[in-house]
Length: 235
Image 1 (tube, one colour):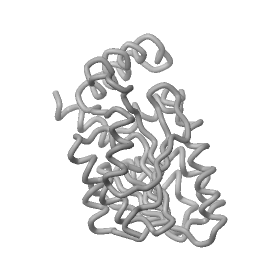
Image 2 (image 1 turned 90 degrees about the vertical axis):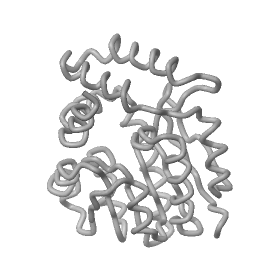
Image 3 (image 1 turned 60 degrees about the horizontal axis):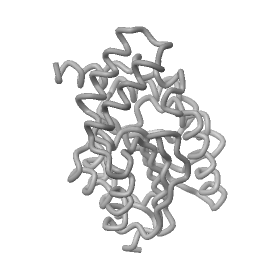
Image 4 (image 1 turned 45 degrees about the horizontal axis):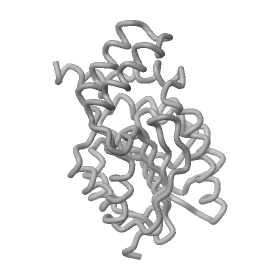
C-alpha cells in the first residue's frame, strides 16, 4: 500500500492539481507572497532560482517570465510532473532546466551559488535528520544575499504528529468537498503515510543551526506557512 501511494503521488499529479486548484492549501496566497519576494530579488539584477520539489510548477510559473531569471532549475522525483512543467507551465521560459533527483542530491551536484532557493510543500515529507541536512545544504548553496523561500505545513508548538494528523485529516474530510471521494481518500492516505511536519519553532531553531542568521514568517494560513530564511553565516 505504501509503495502504491508513493507511485501515485510521484507519477500522477492529477489529484494534487485537483486539490491545489481548489486552493485548500492556500497556494494562491502563498505563491503571491513568494512572487513579491522574487520581484525584490529581480530588481537587484540578474538572479537564479533553484526550485526544490518543483512538481509541474503551475503556481510559480506565471510570475517567472516577467521576472526573467538568468537560470531556473526545477528538481523533482517525478519526471512526468517536470515534463508537464517544461511543455505547459514553463514553456515560455527559455532558460528552464530540470533535474530528476531528490532535493539533497540536487544541492550536492548543483551547489550554486543561487540567489533564490524555493521549495513548496515538499520538505515536510522528509524525516528530521534529512531536513537538518537539507537546510545546511541550502545555506551553503545560497549567494551572500540569497534567500530561501520555504512554503510548507508546520505543527504548532507542543503538538505531536499524531495530533496534527488527526486535525488535518479531519479538516480534509469535512471541508475539502469539491474533489471526488476517491481522490480525497487517496490524498488522505498519502498525508497519513508520508507527512512529517515539524513544529515551526523547532524548524526556526534548526535554520539557525544550519547557518541562517535571519528567519521570519512571511505569512501563515492555519498550518500552511511561507518562511524567509536568509543571511547564511558562511558568507
